[in-house]
Amino acid sequence: MRIIIGVTGASGSVYGWRLLEKLRAQQPQVETHLILSRSGERTAHLEMGKTAAEFKALAHHSYPVEDISCRLASGSYPVDAMVIAPCSIHTMSAIAHGISSNLIIRCADVALKERRRLVLMVRESPLHAGHLRSLTALAEMGAIIAPPMPAFYHQPKSVAEIVEDSVDRLLALAGSPAADARQWEGRK
Image (cartoon, rainbow, N blue to C red; front, side, top):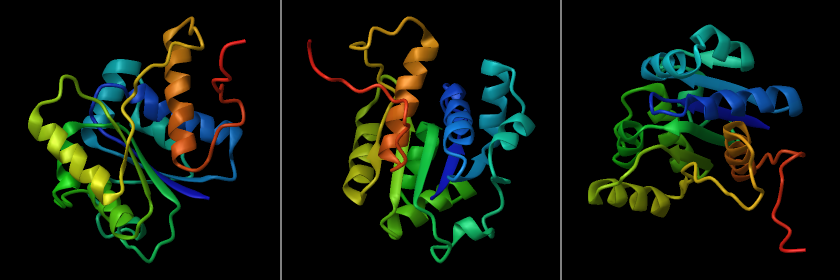
């Protein structure tokens, strides 16, 4: 399996980090292709103290966000899914309107046109009508909109457990579920 992971400048860089970390540790057969935006680099440093090099070390391949001529930008390059975590409103809006101004947006556009899985962990609140219209358009085009909405039925004890649950949802939506993901089994 081959997954593109985009990390934008929205708050929540821990989601992209943990997604890469979990794939590397638990699913090394999944080939990961990382695209980290410049804003994503800044946010990761501010929120986690992580560098671009540390993010890139978790992926099998990484690409500059400006490299719209790389193999990922073509529909002829086989990819199973793309996850953008976190996904900024800027990136979401550009994808919704077909404005392929960088590699993250171009890859999302390719995913949509090739009918591949595209999972967007949109990070914004509150949302105005324009955001909602763009999100609706994306859902109609086939994108999966998966904001990080914490689930509390597992009674998480830490922020890390909340992040883990959201990342497990992303993995399942991308078609590569985590073996250790907790699932709701109803009341006992």
